[in-house]
Length: 408
Image (tube, rainbow, N blue to C red; front, side, top):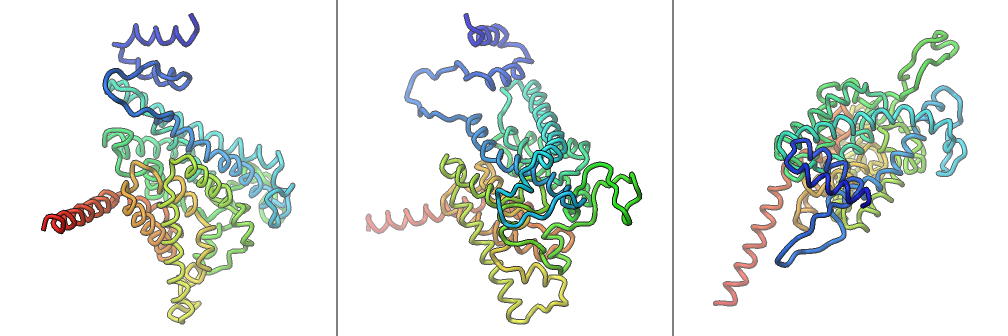
């Protein structure tokens, strides 16, 4: 008898134990369940929730690895160890093991805390409620480290994960029942509870750094003045980066949000795997473009002058909004969450368009936090059921009219 069969037998013998859900979670992570359906006709498919979640994680892994290189690169760039990369995705200045290991050792604890705390809570709730451990946190656990600042204290992250899993998901009934995206719920908690850590206007630099004339020898430097693109534009300054640098991701920002190229490839992978909705992605982009066009028209018409505090972001070229901040990452990996997004095809177009439109609006008009995709997605998560309701009611009315016309 093989190990797999022994584990199945062990599970069967202890099926009445309260700790069995914890064992089953580990067991089914390594092996497929041996349960089969009986009687009647059943829909058969090769995928299940765990495989779907793992597919989304695979789409995010390139962003995670790139984020590790970029964290080290931004560190070395700020202290003058490397020169700025000029428009080549395969630049030898960027893809160095020095950059990677600096980012790896800083980001790895974020991933460990995110999964350790989040899955721990999932196990506790599964044992208390007596149901199987749900796989919903597999994706959330990867999303969270990618959307927070790299230097956020680990205890803050742990507190936010507890809040996001318990309040954002478990109180609604668990995976598939939540009305808000759990990862964005965690980030929103951090934003409102610890706003100074979530401003995103500093470039993280690791460890003790000596900078002659600026910092005393041996002084500890956790972050130095070096605004992100959104931070600079919100202050009315120039972006300071080439378009290709913004597209490839050689810019400061949260770990997973900088490389639009890799996010785009991840989005195409999700569309090909039929997990991510292309309607939501495309309509979100169209909504952002529409809002960007409107702001550019207002600036060109002279309604807003350079003296206005909104001029920097409002005058930003409309399509540049797609490359900066967390817009692309949010649209691809969080707006398309099948649990919290609209379910009808027409509803997806409305839902996505409003996310893009509102994201750029908040980005421009919120001086304290020059980013809007998080709040826009959370807002539309709340309205997604309403959008679907009116779409369905509209379809019902159309069919009733056709039925009356045929019977008349």
